[in-house]
Image 1 (tube, protein in one colour):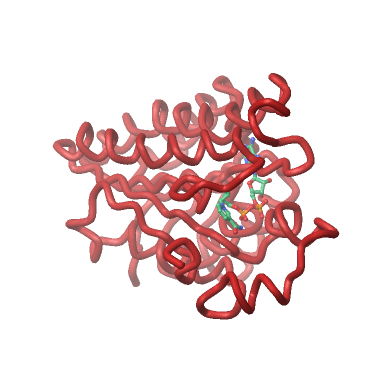
Image 2 (cartoon, rainbow, N blue to C red):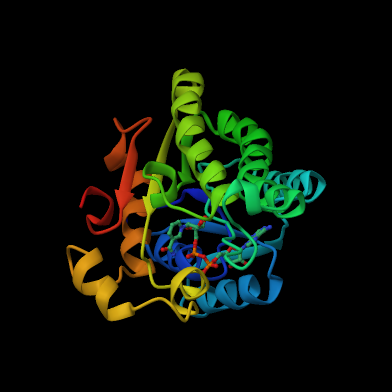
Length: 255
Ligand SMILES: NC(=O)c1ccc[n+]([C@@H]2O[C@H](COP(=O)([O-])OP(=O)(O)OC[C@H]3O[C@@H](n4cnc5c(N)ncnc54)[C@H](O)[C@@H]3O)[C@@H](O)[C@H]2O)c1
């Protein structure tokens, strides 16, 4: 199995891309720690995994709260004694509130950055020491099409997702010498609850026109397809990948 015996923490691991990653990583032999603000979704996913013989636990965690994150990693240390992988996947879009800078409230700017960017900082801050203890490991950050091309009217989201790209590069060079590889996945058009919020719930959004003219593969991506890439990045098969920014978007951003 691809991830046999590895302890991997997944933020937002209860639903969407994170939920698929939790299930796949466990199937590939990992001990999965789901760090979820939605404890019900996290517990449900962990229970589903255990029901089919996998190893998963959920720790209720709000990644935007440094105390919650510190306590979660202290618990991982107590439960598992180390950490081999950290998947910084949790994020929010908040399409009703995010906007171009002149129309964006300070509260929304701060709220989105606290979850999508500060959360990554807190998890790396408290997670990396556990990886060093394990003698190495792998980190995956989550950007977006908004982190690699210009997308209008979601500037707080864009700022956080651009920072994920920049931070991936610095973490890769800083912690590479400790045997910790850092890579970044930039998804787009993956059909989850977030896409409903960012596109499908918008009455002006024409789904068929988007699929026919905006997606080279003429379809949405699935959370399972992103999870496959993440599993590879955490596996020893990706042992020379460090600092890579990989677009998981069916070619949307190169069109
Ligand atoms: N779906 C896409 O097309 C797409 C595109 C670009 C980027 N992304 C990124 O991929 C990641 C996953 O997106 P998704 O589509 O699966 O979203 P989703 O909304 O389906 O799932 C996100 C998960 O994160 C959790 N979460 C939210 N805030 C949290 C917090 N403060 N602490 C802990 N957990 C929290 C939610 O409870 C949820 O389970 C996000 O970072 C998102 O920005 C997704």
